[in-house]
Image (cartoon, rainbow, N blue to C red; front, side):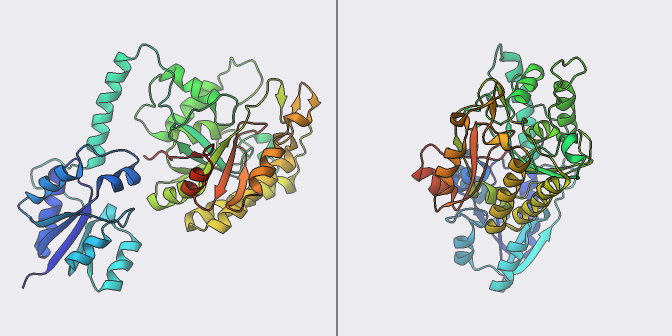
Length: 416
């Protein structure tokens, strides 16, 4: 009796690479395929599939190597679990990029053989992948958009949220102690308001070069180009914008960058791990506040010392470790510690000076007090330099929180 073999995926842009994968998997036995539903695709990819689930099911079922196919009834990354229980396979096959410790552990617990295949094209054919096909389609669309766009408000330009280590990208801070800044690149699924700590000045600089969307190029080189363009030698205001703005916007996913008495970081590390990005989306929301007022200064009364900068750097280290471990309690503690280190150096982030005068009504402390007292809020900070804009919260469950608080904004991290 032949063994039962199981594979799972979305198979939206069905191509020769998928067919070759099915043929290779079918060498282990009768092949059964689980297909991600439209709802799971939308949740996982943050966009609708090009082809609806019934059409994808029809196409996969009619591939010679496939014995039977089903629409997965679960959700999330392991949406295939109900299909796995239905098929009861002997072998679970994944391609190398789709392998994970979670899938390996799942197979071990159920006595299923776990096999990882390298992605190889069929003999004589070009290597294909869904991501490369989508990149080609996006390139064609970008060329069309650029040709057709007479004017644009830059709604497709990403923004960024700084999670920890803010200010350390300024040499007058990192000269006291080196450390990491941590950012996430955000899809602009909400109105990105001016003077609100989400790098709107950098976004406007980007729009001068690329009005419609970011170009397809190496993200780190792109970030450096944006940084140099924004801080050109003819700039007369004497302010050098921190590199965390251009890096946070241009480099997708979760990113940390290490500063040591220089404007540009010595090293940059990123992760596109889906479970890590989903962990952040599940626990981060933003609350709109009044924008930073005209004449506002958050650097007056600054008190920067080596001990305070070290506290900022230590909090960023702890924040990165907690995020990668998907530990919500440690993440919240480190996130809060980073903000406390910031305001220890820059108390004007909470109560800024307005034209040289401290005004109680300009303080954001009442908003912080309001949300920090809520049971489902674990930590809080302000993006950017503070003084107004948004309050970025770590919460127990972002979806439940935004359902209960309609002013709250869910965040969507930009994927590569």
